[in-house]
Figure 1 (cartoon, rainbow, N blue to C red):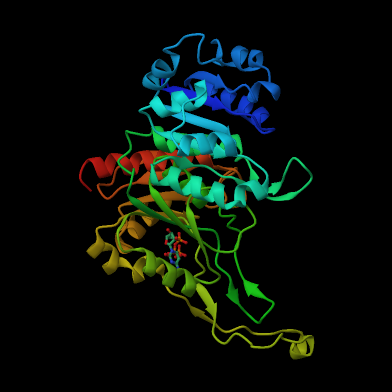
Figure 2: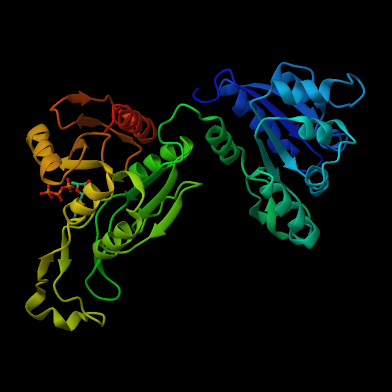
Length: 403
Ligand code: CTP
C-alpha cells in the first residue's frame, strides 16, 4: 500500500505501558507492506516480550549494543524512517542530548533517516520543564512528534501523556514516507458538512450532509503530505486527525472562512452542502407556539451566497484548482457539466440523488467525474475513503499536466 510498500521502517520501542500499542502499530506497518526492524530497550522488554515483536516482524529483535557492535550503524543506515513508540521521557532526553549508551539511543544518533517520536508518559513528567526543554531541542533538530494525547493514564490519572493511537501514527508515518505526491507541501482547502441557517435562536434550516465525504478528502490530502484546512459546518462525525479545522455555522460564515483561506491555496475541494436559502428575517427570540396563528407560520426565504460563484475571481487570481460536487436528480451529466462551467470548477463529481448506498448519511458513494474537456468517468460504488483517494489521484494527474 502506497507509500509503505517495500519501505524500511525501524521501530524503536522503549519502556512504557504503551508498548502494547506498538505491537498493533507493527501489525499495521506490516499489513501496509513495510519491512520493519524492531529494536527494544531493556526497559521495554519488561512490558512486552521480544518474541511477540519477532513473530510479527518476521525478524530477530535487536536489544543489545554489544551482540553486534556495528548494529547501531547498520540499522539506522538501512531505514527510510525510524518510529520511536513509545518514546519515554528517558529516551527523549537521551536523544535530545546526543547520548549513545544503549542500542536505541546509539542507533537513533547514527540514523540518517527522518525520526517520528511518539511520547508516552505521566502528565507531570510531560509537563516538567526538563521534558519541555528536551522536546524543544528535539523539534528544533527536526524530530517529528505524534501526540501525546489527552486521556486516561496508566496510574488512574487523566491528562496529556497517552501515546498516540497506532492509526494516527500510521498517518503521520505515511506523510513522512510520501514522496510521489504533487500535493506534498501544497495547501489544500476542503469544505465539508452542512450549513445551518437560523430561524430563531434554537431552530435552523439544515440538510442531511454528514461531512464524511469532505473529511475523507481532507484526510486523503493530509496523507499525501499537503497542508490541509478543513472548513466544516455542524457535524457529528469526528474531523480527521491532522488537518487544521475551522468550524462554521451558516453559509455566510463559511464564505468568510473560505475567503480568508484562499490565499496560497493550490486545491479547493468544495464538498460542503451549502444551504441555498437563508431566512429573510431570523427572529432574535424563540418563536412561540402562539405565533402559529391559524395553525401555520410562513417563513420568508432569501437566497444565500453561492460560495463557488462568489469566489470565482479570487480563485482564478490565485490559480486554485477547484473540485466541486453536483447533486442531481435528473439529466446528471448535462446538469453537472453546466454547473462546472457556470461555477468555474476544474473538475466536478456528480452524485445522483436517490442512488442507493450513495450520497448523504451513508459510508459509500457512487460518483461520476466530469472534466472541462467533456471526459466522463464513472467510478464504481466505493467507500467514501476510496472515492476521496480516486478524486485526489485525478486532481494530481491534472496538476502534473500543468493545470
Ligand atoms: N455550492 C456553493 N454554494 C452554495 C451551494 C453549493 O458553493 N450556496 C457548491 C457545492 O459545495 C458544490 C457545488 O456548489 O460543490 C454544487 O452544489 P449543488 O448543491 O449540486 O448545486 P447548486 O449550485 O446548489 O444548484 P442546484 O441546487 O440548482 O442544483
